Amino acid sequence: MLGLATFARDQQVPRTQMSSVAILLCTFNGARFLPAQLSSLAHQSFTNWRLFVSDDGSTDETLAIVAQHKDRLGTAPVDIRDGPQQGFVRNFLSLACDPSIAGDYFAYCDQDDVWQPDKLSRVAAWLDTRPPHIPAMYCSRTMLIDEDGRPCGYSRAYRRTPSFRNALVQSIASGNTIVFNDAARRLLIAAGGTAKVPSHDWWTYLLTTGAGGDVHYDQIPQVQYRMHGENVIGTNAGLRNRIRRLYLLSRGRFQRWSEMHVAALEPFRPHMTAENRALFDLFRASRQRGFFGRQIGFLNSGVYRQTFLDNLGLIVAVWARKI
Image (cartoon, rainbow, N blue to C red):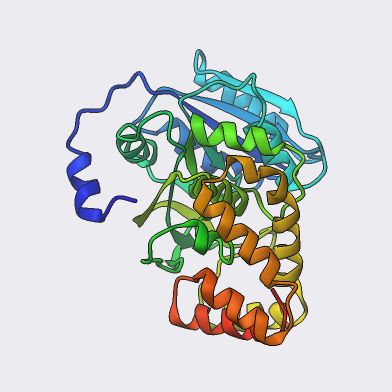
């Protein structure tokens, strides 16, 4: 991962507009907020993009809004298709794993957010510095906005280095900020578009780091993340959400997610680095051990979360066999 100083220097390197971005937008009854998101895409300073929209059976005006947007863009390429209608994870993976969708970079896009005008330019400035054969993923902090678009805070800031040791126990990358290169995209295809995982963003983070790829977490928000009652997944910011996560931990949600990841990662082992294969095997085995063996196994694995309080929660989860 590049430090902020290095990233600032890299941005001075001239970027070729030859790089192309496939924007992967999944929709479902998103008519209320979709126009603002589509407008923010149309006003990106980076122009070499193509929009792929996978709709999961909307019954409102979503498809009509997308069609109108396509007409307004004229020659700008917009591809509209029917989604698998098996939930948001399957919908996003259906786009990410479709070999007919070409691009140098691939950007997850939610229907109810707003992108900063220079988001894709900033992302491409970093991804263009990465060797194309090395999996690479960009993500960032988000600015939170309410239903009317008014700022209401920021997502949590993460400062520890992204890694597979972190990815095994925490997702730091909000899907609406993630952009990845074709090498990372090939990992998603290898793992399969029907992988049974909790979220597409955490899965992308796991695969990229597991294969020894590069992940850059940008402290400067590039997405306005709209908070409203219809969000499928909310923010982790705030005391209320921390308490809610502790409650869900006690109910076994984190344990179920770990089980899903272990099962889905097992066939992916050949794509991991040797170090990460050993780490994964230790993580998997430690989950099944008795009390003391579990504590020792997780301690030796070096897995970590991003903040002090998060790591206290991890210790409790290991102690209570909730991981």
